[in-house]
Image (cartoon, rainbow, N blue to C red; front, side, top):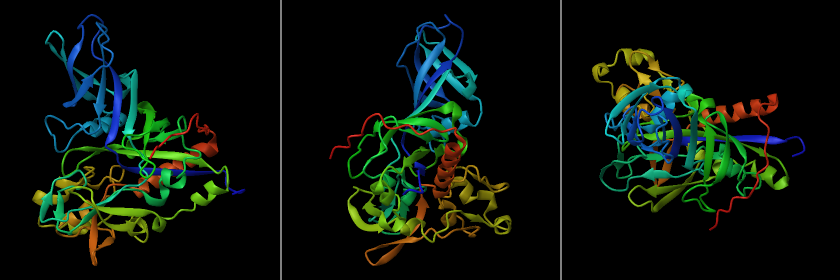
Length: 390
């Protein structure tokens, strides 16, 4: 421990409890008194809490999981976040208290305030989901629905890289700890909803103006659109116990397998099943794709959760989530990756979807390390402990 001062940890995955508070200029003062409704790229948001009477400015809260009215299966709040941070202009539509409808085009630079927050994020890893019954269950833990019985398993969690696994007793992580949220400096506000001592998670906050699109975005699921969020947390090596915790490995971290119907436990695996000896990156064979007999109706293009594949352009590496859905969706096997299996009741069930991105988490942890080395990120001690309760 004398040779190590700080270890940077990170996680990246689907985190439904992601939202943003935005202050949006619409028109000049006096043009309207207040707002009844607001949408961003046809994704409904909640006006307020401040009415900003007669100021021409609308405050709004947008959930990362809210689906678009026009394309509810493929576009939602997480996609709006991505478009804003990517520098794109989005359409804002309001209905005033007087009943008038006003539209405006705005970008992130137009917003005087754009802060992302999470109600539940940076979970201490998560679960593996399986359908134990015949048929297909529509769920956010799948892309095309979870097929049963025992035909596939989907997983979440970055394993040994996860911040809460590396500081499991929260000796350094606490209220006020400085972090990276989607590449931008942010802070821990406290514990998240449904957090417990066995399954902790955090509430976080960060300025969207400094975020990077590669660490965030909208995700298509088998139910409704969801949100990808990335978190990096530095852990100072303050004592021997912290140092020992930092040695944790994937094989030592339990991954419970639960039934999608009621979350009842079915089996136990570990994150070695997910990440050790597996392909973190998807390999794409352009030649196989070019000769595919299904190019007119490309299945991968239709179901890709991050919308990162186009048959005429290939994989957009900046958007690709390396989830592995394409490996099982392509009938010509143009996509290759070993995602592994999990043993359940004496059968090896294939992992068909990873809703966490180990490569992206490793990159964010590395970026945090560089920022610390270069002096752009100074560690802040927590101002209070997080009481996880039972």
